[in-house]
Image 1 (cartoon, one colour):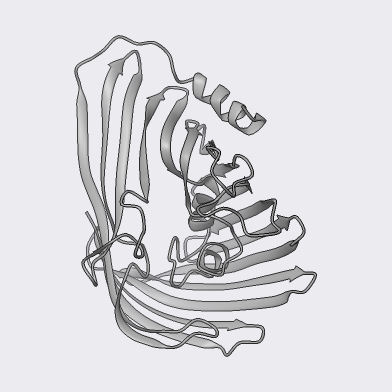
Image 2 (image 1 turned 90 degrees about the vertical axis):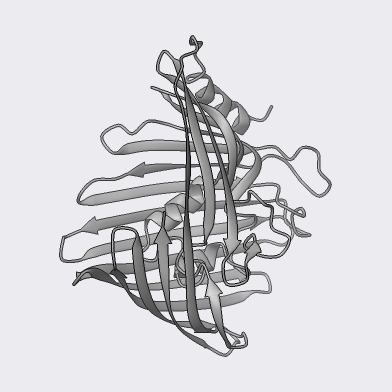
Length: 337
């Protein structure tokens, strides 16, 4: 077992105490639907005028449950399925796994939670929690530059065959660890490991996240042995405005070395029964034969119709070295249930 797997396993052992069976269990159905109309174009792409799905948050449906085992220990599970309501189609894209958002089972107690299966990466959680557009795969500069097609990171926002440990929150401070196995698949070069530290308060909040990738769906690209990524994120809520800042680096090691530096600045401002949003992100990728800069600016307004339903409008400009710039505008509705 690698050092990274041992680190998560040791943390996991702290929550696996023996307990007598108790009699209480719960199962919850929940999810989110997001659909919009838009004219969408990233740098160098063709403009599409369309009804779209999941522009602000990817639509999904989920089931989660817990059984009280006694002694402060609960058995927990979660299965979550992405979908595209504009087409009535399963997954984020054709060929996506059915339970691609989360699919795990584990134990939870006073010393934290340990889960086995497909878990969301701590790096993705830090990225979405510290930018004004959250986990928007269409409009958040950070999500686009790290996770979207052509982004810097290798692999998905969730890892298969993984073990995760999440600590309890201590005065707003928590730690999350994640590791997976390559399971001797062709093209894989070892186990992945990642983690983050999160701190949330009414004013200042912050995070540091790290991950090392040695395996991914389909294997690593030729010339890449592994990828190291690190990110810092901060927010400060002044009440009249909430400021966001992120800075990170993604480095591919091997004969195809590539280093990408990414940062984003942003803000949200409460206006009426909603909030105005602004974000500017820049990434610069440099290697032996690569020197590419991407700049993305997004502005939007999110209006609350109720506690669970929002409507939004967004404009984005996307520029990249050697490509024609793209301009996007869209409006949609998001319902959480």
